[in-house]
Length: 231
Image 1 (cartoon, helix red, strand yellow):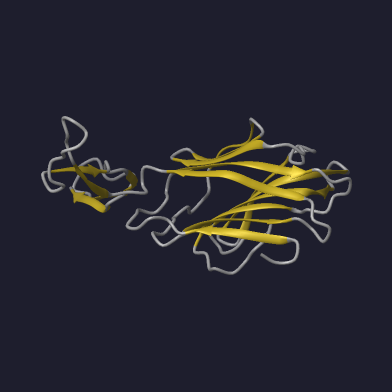
Image 2 (cartoon, helix red, strand yellow):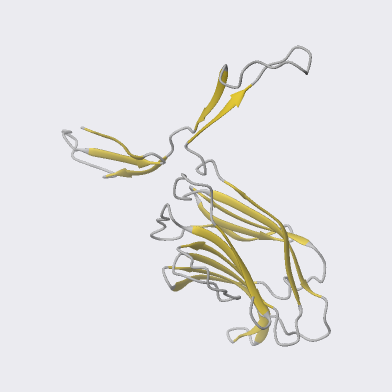
């Protein structure tokens, strides 16, 4: 952590697939002070270093910024809190949300990246609705991070109960299973093994079209790399 800001970075279990689809949820508490000192929370999915970051995020992957410090919304001549979506180092989407982030109480925040795009909820309101992040191409070594800036006179910008879910996190996993009829004597650990093999998931189909007479080579990519190529 730094002066008035701090972050946490999570390295996911390996081996795993790029997080093309995931859901990240956590509880947030923003506010509680008379004055506005904090500036927001950033959620990052990208190639992150161990360096501390704040509400601006880190890297050039996906960054969702919950900007709790009111920003001059010149088009409406009012100040508003903002949700920003950044990707590849550029801001790609902005949602003006009035005074909705600073609730001074615990509320649920949720991000979902799916086949139909990115959605963001805060306090049961869906502020970003299936926004397509152009060029979305996560890499296997990307990590997940969350940072915040509480200001020089720290205002509460707390996160708790963080949960990341994705069917792409595990390819193959095995566990030894032991059986017992009396709870005291068990079969040998090597007697039975339970295996999980994740279903293959398609992420792209190229090309999207071809000549009607056929003969086009089709490439299907997904959770296991290049799944198949055929005519």
